[in-house]
Structure formats: structure tokens, C-alpha cells
Amino acid sequence: MAMIEMEVEGIGIDGHNNPLVLLRDKDRTRFIPIWIGAAEALSIQMGLDDRVAPRPMTPDLINNVMQTLEMRLVQVTVNDFANTVFYARLHLRVGAPDAPIQELDVRPSDGIALALRSGCPILVDEIVSEKAGVPFDNPDAEPDNPEVERFKRLLEDVDLGDSDNN
Image (cartoon, rainbow, N blue to C red; front, side, top):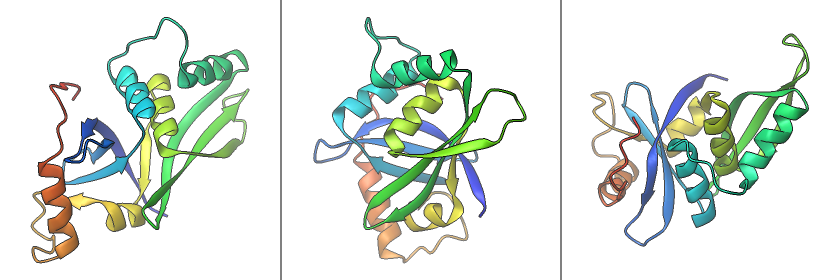
């Protein structure tokens, strides 16, 4: 299973006022929009901005618990996409640096919020990227593919605010 490292481009609002997180590969050739809830959007944006709430939000709490228990988030993977739903996993190492990695299911939005707080990579399975990604500036992309064109039009309407994160 080939994985692609992604970065968070930002939090956006689509034309129907639905929040989404926009992931992109490092070469900026493929974007993956993941629709999320408002609370998750706020949590991810706070992680992008390195802001801390006066009282810990859930990802802050989980990150604090992991640090206290000597757990390290190694990576977050978005490993499946089916019926318009994304699936993800946390890859955790408990204790020693050579301890085996434990995996847990997680909603992608929660995994992304944790990854931003812990500084670990966000990876997307290549198959998920092919199914749900939107290619940009890719000469090999199918120019007449209606799904790709629909996503491109959708992303044109996404407002990322004045986010200057990357």
C-alpha cells in the first residue's frame, strides 16, 4: 500500500456553508477535500494557528494524555474512502522508541487535529487519493473526466479565508 504525505492547505467553507479540510500533496498536484463538522473545523484551525484554548479541547486533552503516558503519535493515515466516507487510523508508539506501533481507528478530522498538535505526518493511501483526490496542474490528468471537473468547480467555490498557513 503506497502512501502519499499530505499537508493541511486550510479549512474552508463550500458554497453550501459546509466546513471542510483541504489536504494537498507537497508538490501541490492533488488536493483532497474532506467535509467535517464545525467543531472539528475549529479544532483543526486552532492546530494550524498554534492556538490553545483556555480549557483543553478534545485533541489537546488526548495529546496531553498521550504525552503523560509516554505515547507518541507516529503518523495519521487516511486509509479508505467508501460511500463518501473517509476512514483513518492513528499509529501510536507506547514507551520505547523501538516498541511496536499500535493502530487505532479515528475520524479523519480528529486524526488531523491530533497530527497538527503532535507534529506527525498525515499520509493518504494512494488508492484513496485516486478515488477522492482532485488533480491540479497534472498533464496526465483526464481532462474530460466529469468527476474531476465537478470537484474542480466545487473547489473554486471554497473559501479558505485569509489563511496563510503554508
